Each structure stands twice: as C-alpha cells, then as structure tokens.
Amino acid sequence: MLADVASRLKDTDTVLEIGCGTGGTASRLAPGVAKWTATDFSTEMVRIAKAKPSAGNVVFVVADASNAFDGGPFDAICAFNVLHLVDDLPGLLTRIHANLKPGGLLISKTWCFADMKPSLRALFAVLRIFGLFPATASLRAVQLRQVLQDAGFAIVSERVFGAHRQNPYIIASKAA
Ligand SMILES: C[S@@+](CC[C@H](N)C(=O)[O-])C[C@H]1O[C@@H](n2cnc3c(N)ncnc32)[C@H](O)[C@@H]1O
Image 1: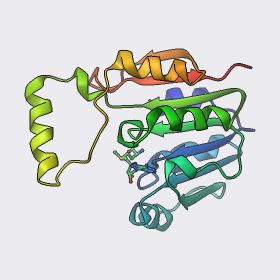
Image 2 (image 1 turned 45 degrees about the horizontal axis):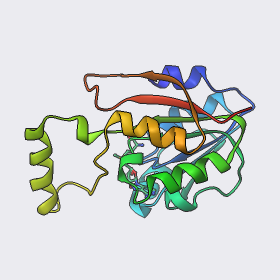
Image 3 (image 1 turned 30 degrees about the vertical axis):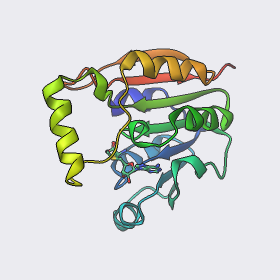
C-alpha cells in the first residue's frame, strides 16, 4: 500500500496526514515529498512519533482531524484507518475537500464495519461496552463511496491490501 501511495505523490507535494498514530507512514513516505504534516488528536501518539527518527521535512502536530488544516491547501491528504473513528464524517470530508488544491488527492484506508460478519460486529460491540474498542461509524463500503462523492470527490481507485475486503484503500480526487 505504501508503494502505491508513494507512486501518487511528487517531490514538490505538500501532504497532510490525519490520524497519523505513531508516525510510521509519515517517516516512510515523507522523503518522497516536499513537506509532510502528520497530525493526530492524541498527545501520546504524537509524543511517540516525535521521539522516533524521521525525515527533516516532517512535522508532527497534535490536532483533531476536524481542525488540522493549518498550512493548506495541500496536494494530498492521507487518512489511514481513521475516517471510521471521527464523529462527523460528511463534515470532515467537506473540510478535507476544501483544503485540497484543485486536482488534489484524498488517500484513505477505512474500516467498513457494517460489511463485517454479524458475529464479529457483536464482538466489537461487547468490547466497546468494556472500553476495549473505540466508537466507530457503522459504514458499508457503498456508503463510504457515496459520502465521498457527496463531499465532491471522484473516486479514482479502490483496492484492498491485505486480507480484509472491509478495509478498502480508496483514492479520491478533487476536480482539477
Ligand atoms: C487505528 S489508528 C491508525 C494509525 C495510523 N494511521 C495507521 O494506519 O497505522 C487511528 C489513529 O487516529 C487517531 N484519531 C482518532 N480519531 C481522531 C480524530 N478525530 N482526530 C485526529 N486523530 C484521530 C487515533 O489517536 C489513532 O492514532
């Protein structure tokens, strides 16, 4: 997946990543772009990310996804395994679209829990009750595609990396 992301980025690009976690994606992909701003709302995730060696063009910032757009508009915005965790996905996608340059890309990988087997969904629901699993949107992939299109994006590529078809990797573009 990282090779596919890298192939879509240019060395002149400014990239925003939301929900960067401990910064693994940023550290691998930043050398191929001009600037990579990696954000997460967890101070602990950002602390760990900052403690790791990384390229000189990466900045790690504590920010909620809804308010992470300082320095935009961006050539690409990356959101790996985070869109299903936000409170207002349509609102966030509208903000992401507004903070991309014309022709810019949203590069995403998102869990679509509503496409999972009922037994697995029941397990996650129980884990959630005990605080062992976060609150997530119960999306189907078909709904994810629709909400992307409703925000103004055109889907240019969709693939599955790994064993889970419920975790599609979707590239969506803003009109040039
Ligand atoms: C499942 S982890 C994914 C981390 C990394 N992107 C990856 O794919 O390995 C989700 C990350 O999103 C962050 N996150 C969840 N909700 C967020 C929000 N509303 N704004 C910013 N970050 C958020 C969490 O703190 C966590 O680091």
